[in-house]
Amino acid sequence: MSNLEITMEAYLTFCQDQKRLDRKTMKAYRIDLKQFSEQIMVTEILEITPNILENFITSLHQKYQPKTVKRKIASLKAFFHYLEFKEIIDKNPFNKIQIKFREPVILPKTIPLSTVENFLSIIYRERKQANTDYQKRNALRDIAAMELLFATGMRISELCSLGKDDIRFEDGTVLIYGKGSKERRIQIGNHDVLQILKEYKQEYQKEIENCQHFFANQTGRSLSDQAVRRLINKYTSLAAIDLHITPHMFRHTFATSLLEADVDIRYIQEMLGHSSITVTEIYTHVAVSKQRDILVTKHPRKNFHL
Image 1 (tube, helix red, strand yellow):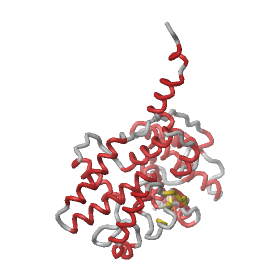
Image 2 (cartoon, rainbow, N blue to C red):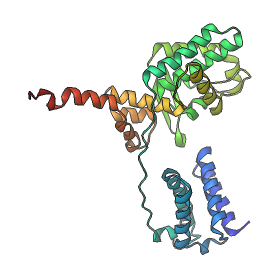
Image 3 (tube, rainbow, N blue to C red):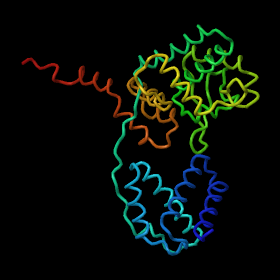
Image 4 (tube, rainbow, N blue to C red):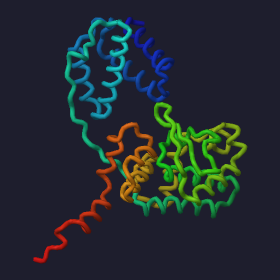
């Protein structure tokens, strides 16, 4: 291994053991740093110049969308900050370059509420019409997972990582472990959702104990991201919904619906687990129906008599 590669490995160990970064962040850091070391054709850290960094960043812009480029640059900046901190380098080459590019605003994709209702209705119908206990149990679990996803706006990773006791039925709350190991507790506000979650837990008690996760499959293993995506595709097809629905769209729909119902954006920020209000503010761009209502009823033009 080269001097650069050895130092990168030491840095990744530092990120894991000292900074306690989560698995997904560690994976992204490793991919980004490996790509950098393989492309620049330099083996010694002290040989890395601002010009080399600028050329590498230019190549990133040619291959990736701005959001991905921004993440990869952030990974590199964190690495060079570590090199400074450990006094491996005297001067950070990033200090000599200016990085400015406009990241386009990509509005979150939401699901029409009538479509959400149709989607959930199909799963309830499948459970009711199931011919075998296996099919009934599968549908029960699918209902519980989808209802909770929409009821709380949690991420799919948070749903799949829920512990066996993270839902407190005595007060109707769910404990969620978000990005950066941040905890938040959300109220499950709908009685029917709580009832289906109780029913699911009673039915799947053995499997839940076996895997120590709240959501399990019938073999006793925890439910995976891929399994959730497959079940969404399955019921979207059964409901003849002409829309590609992803798990994250339930989160977007949750947030946008609350905003349109006049919920304070800071409450929504807390429920979504966003560390910055600027992240949550993206939903102000998609609250179209609320905007329409305001402009139809409040705009002074309606009082003109021409």
